[in-house]
Length: 255
Image (cartoon, rainbow, N blue to C red; front, side, top):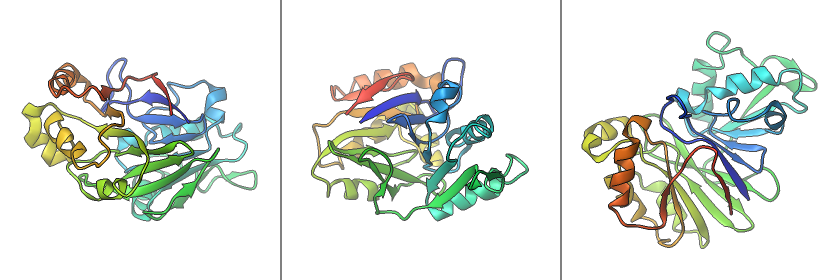
């Protein structure tokens, strides 16, 4: 399975993009960075987007992608998440006021944008032997992480979360976790702010990883606030765990 990091930061600065992870050229985890990272031809290949929660930095490029592909998209776009998260998305974003209601615009045999609710704990098949499963995490709003299953094992993507329990309990039932993608938004000195916002620091991130039974798989860190990136890198470095790597946009990983 191939993953391309379209963006991996906790906000947008010059040269820093919000979160978007492209699997096999057609499936997205979050939609904070799409159109500024892909050609129109590459955008045409996207069919499914799995959203972790309704904060703007994880959904904003749904608008731009749908707007770009209105005439070109062959089969429309499907947005997946839990029912509660999709309700927030529809009520506050894809509502005809903030963003055109692409879910009501006719497109060939359906609509340009389809919202499809998935249940937590059930794998949803997508493409090329890949399935995706939602599991709740503890953010400051309704949120899920995703477990991605392929022939080579399972990848864990936390999305935005503070200290949490459920997703790690689920992961500990899996025999073949091959990678973990975990957020780390703030440096340790802003622990109080991180707690308030439902995010992790290097100190709390490493405590989260201790909950995971699998201790050998690589760990990829994302959602760093760029203004604190150097400090976060230094604090993660002091952990002296070679398996932990900080992601960079444009990076491509093969599992």
